[in-house]
Length: 295
Ligand code: 5RP
Image (cartoon, rainbow, N blue to C red; front, side):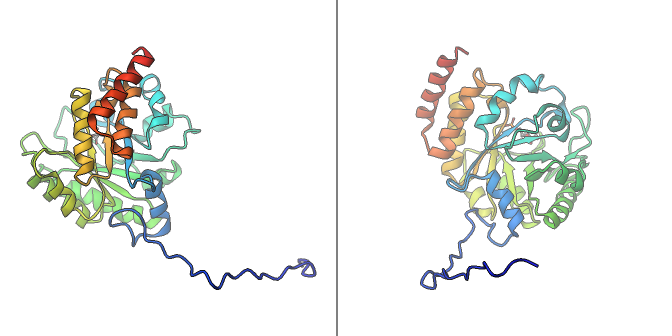
């Protein structure tokens, strides 16, 4: 029986201060449960509403991609500058120290390789294992217009159902087949389908014409993939344009880890994403950091 004699009566009710009921900062996410919101708030910086995700999951279908031959050597130095890491569970368990506390987005679809039809994926990670790995989201490829379009959509809806049960968001990654037009019309279609079917946020590609219509028509946050390696200034321009046209961040891989100076490049990308820095200024930062590092 606790000693109640020393119990101090609570007096500070602050009856003059109404309890705050704040909306959640992230587009379309206000109605989610606490755990799901909390995970999203780890992926997206609540101060800017944006994220710099570092993507290095490419090996799940293409093996040791250029720049990812030795993830322990090339990627670990970048981790302090990333808001979020996107990777496979194999790399997470074998190469990422558990002392790393950055939010993890685990690649949860797979089953194909570059030698075969890529859209023929299935769910490749059990939700129980995702929870065991303490992830903040699961990522699934969705192939709108692809040969296995329906299967890939159903992979996504299953992950949404399972993840929602445990408060784990699903990132839908819109994959574009070689034969498909990479234009705003296609990305409006692909991103909207993913959002309508429950994806909590969506990764897609930037397009020069009409990208603002893609973000406007999508009720959840969009992050852009970097795509194949382009010159650093061009990659910074792409990130800048995407952010100014409504993207909530980047999920960038090759344009960071294949850069001549990856540590400098990720910091320049951060300046564009979180500080609205112009591409030219961010490129100056890149060059300064690159020269300082002797890369
Ligand atoms: C693979 C992915 C990759 O994570 C992502 O597209 C890679 O990023 P980047 O295009 O910037 O190298 O989702 O399909």
